[in-house]
Image 1 (tube, rainbow, N blue to C red):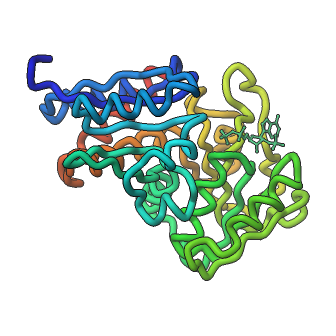
Image 2 (spheres, rainbow, N blue to C red):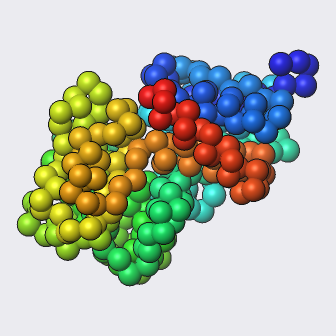
Length: 283
Ligand code: ATR
């Protein structure tokens, strides 16, 4: 770090367990970017003051995490249309004195699915969970042209409410359908767990029995700690292709870096590989 080092960071509450500083600082090192990325735990009544401070001192980029993904929108100068339709921002770019909000959570997942050669247009995708993470993922799936997004949640009314909120999402042609139980799960080509079920320390838990899924359906988990959740382990041993949570975690960060620093795919490809290898060894 020197007098030219530019500031980046994540704001949220809590942020102590965040992997973002590790991901972004590793990326700065690999690309030779003179940046420093720190974690800032911000109290609710200090959010505006904190954001003004980042802008005033010339920060370049901020990641936004729970509980501020919605609250930050009112403060921003502009919001990208996709993030605005979703009502959630997870990346802020300060550019020429203006602050612009983006959402890379859902697009990160779509990118990972494409890396796994998963066709999305006209497919049926089942999303488990109806919380904040689910919202971004459902929006991105509809945006990507998925024909039916099935939505299951432990508390069914939440799935019904989320489906209602997203039913006309950004002019999408697909539909979003609440699933009250597992009876129709076998109709889905891709299954994505967005709940916290299976996360450390509850590593023995799983959100769904593999036997109710369509044979060969792609199974994805956003949980990345442990690296291999019970869901992914059982899916893999039943012959399902799988996507690990860490892949999505890294991809949403790389998309934010593309917004902040304009890195090309060629620059990012070897870094993605290195980050994945290191994350799997570390988490
Ligand atoms: P996030 O922003 O990470 O999605 P959230 O909004 O609190 O967090 O949502 C957590 C999700 O995990 C919800 O879908 C929650 O289900 P409920 O709406 O019924 O609470 C789901 N979840 C958490 N613990 C669960 C459990 N033990 N079994 C099933 N679902 C669970």
